[in-house]
Structures are given as C-alpha cells and as structure tokens.
Amino acid sequence: MESERNGKATLVITYNSVEGYPSGTYNGKNGPVVVHSNGNAKTWGREEAEGKLGQIMHGLYGKVDQDDVKQIYLYVGLYAKDGALRAASNIAGNGKKLTLVACGCDRSEKSHTAERIGAPIIWSECGGLHTLNKIVSEELTK
Ligand SMILES: [Zn+2]
Image (cartoon, rainbow, N blue to C red; front, side, top):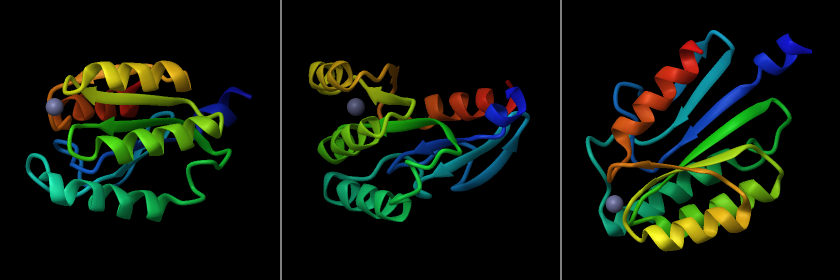
C-alpha cells in the first residue's frame, strides 16, 4: 500500500514559472513531480496571465482527476486570480488534495475561496517563483 501511494504524482501548476525547475517531469524519491508552467522570468502581465493559465488548464483537462495524482499545488497570483480560483474550485470538487500557493494580493478573497473549497494556502511572494521552488525541492527529496 505504501509503495502504491508513494508512486503517485505531485502536480505543480502556475501561469508563471518555478525558479530552477522548467516545465516538465522530475523524478522524486517518492514519485514524480510534474511542473506545468511558463518559461517567464518573473510574472505575466494582466493581459497575458489568464491566457497562460487557460492554456495550462486546457492541457491538463482530464489529467488532474486521475487516481495517480497525489497532491496538487496551484499558484494563485493577482493577474490570473479569477481563473486560478475557478480552477481551484474545479480541482477541489474532484476530491483531490489541493494546496493553493498564493501571494498576499487580494488576500481575503483568496482566504475565503480556500476556506470554501477546503484547501490550505501556502502564502508566497508575488509571482510565487521562489516559494514554488522550495515546494518542488521538498517534494523531490521527502
Ligand atoms: Zn501579489
């Protein structure tokens, strides 16, 4: 049972990027960590962010509700906040272990949504690149 659980994937989803981990699959000690991101250096502007998130979520359609997914980390920033919170609601609705990684912009709205869907929040800096880096590094080694 233990090995079965450990083989499941961790998904990290951000419309920005993860510092040090370009989009792709990384083999951790206890299962793969899959980063879905864009190769930008900081954060997308308001115009682009929702589009970038939409592309990623479209590519993930049908994948996030599979049984081989252990944990999902979803970045919720400022510019694609609405799309990200919608995506969060959908993912949480599938009974998955969702954790939001959110910057402090519009903090109360993010807190309320997280409470409503029952997902914890890891607070991050704007853009989330560094916090996501720490999360991926920890997931790969724990
Ligand atoms: Zn912010």
